[in-house]
Length: 106
Image (cartoon, rainbow, N blue to C red; front, side, top):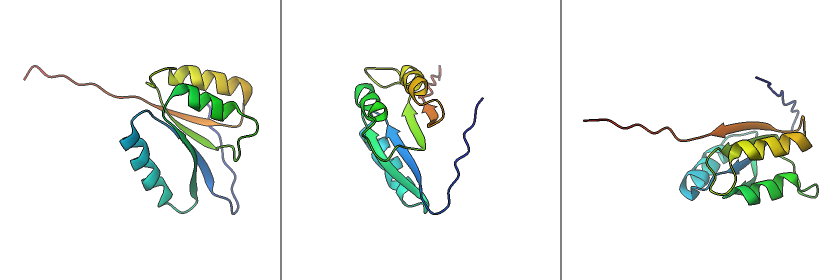
């Protein structure tokens, strides 16, 4: 697995959130914004919005880290990761999350 080292002096780590569950996304944003040295620079609720924002060369500031839901309704988080990494080979660290299902016979 590749890892990206983020060098910081006085600027915060910029994080982008992509998740179709508004309550989760807003809650995570609130938690992250309480941390010194972290700034949420964008958020989206579907894959198309995510690709549009991450691939837009005019969008600023570019995130250091993208927290991305693997199960977005229109475009998979895996496809988004692949598309963005092709264009920005060393500019993003992706953390893809999904849901774990558990069922019990009890």
